[in-house]
Amino acid sequence: MPASLANGEGGSGPDPRTTVVVITKDRRTELLRTLRTLRELPERPPVIVTDNDSRDGTAEAVARQFPEVELLRPGRNLGAVGRNLAVRHARTPYVAFCDDDTWWEPGSLRRAADLLDAHPPLAAVTARIVVEPSGQEDPVVAELRDSPLSGPDWLPGPALGSFLAAATVIRADAFRGVGGFHPGLWLGGEEELLATDLLTRGHWLSYVPELTIHHHASQVRDSTDRRVLGLRNTLWFTWLRRPLPSALRRTGHLLRTVPRDKPTLRALARAVAGLPWVLRERAPVPASVEARIVALEKARRHSTARRYVG
Image 1 (cartoon, rainbow, N blue to C red):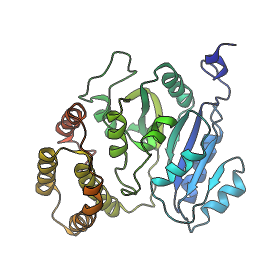
Image 2: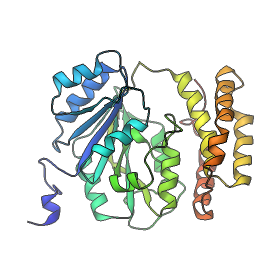
Image 3: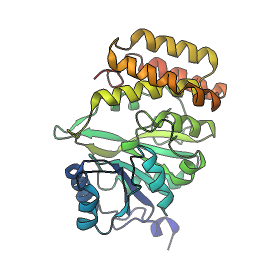
């Protein structure tokens, strides 16, 4: 039997190449819906859930209703690093990230694995995001589709400079090779640093519109806290990886354009408090990667999908 058929390529049955990784905290209803959907996928992927210290019975419900799911309970809220823990337990070459309020379209995991099989330099593929219950595309899709970055002809879609963790299938070895999500960032725009480190190592990232993931946004969320974390982490990423002139310019632009309110002050205070470890770990990217970051920065300047409001 050809290796591609053994891996499930071109078939409709179970596909052993991809593990789905989900992190969750206090979203029992949403998570159970997602797990029911994942259970019904034709690929029958193994699923690993990291429960970030939920207090609403999430872990107990998963253990009771989904005994086939590997449930990790670290006993504290690891944020995005909960994905690192899950990937350490994965035994497949690819990992599909999934939030507790998102779920993959049937066939998308198989197609993503086919593409990663075919193109070893490709580290990750990001799917089209459909918002439920409206069925409309998420506004960020236009930004992915119109990426200003160029790439080799073999890429299955536009080249990307970052990705969305809730909508991406990634090569597990590449993820582990750059250390996964940085524990210092915890949560909130944590993908940008990981993606930049992948690009620095010569990997490629691509948006692939034929892949689809659905997102029914949870009502259990604190948008203001997410804004604080997002702005803090943007500043930390800037000083961790951008050359000095770019770091100064980007910081100045953010200070001029973010809302002048208490959440912004909280974000700035947290960013300043973290400067000692950020400067200690600072490792500016090479010029080729910085050029891609600059191109993306210009394209995102007027993005409605990336605003520090809420």
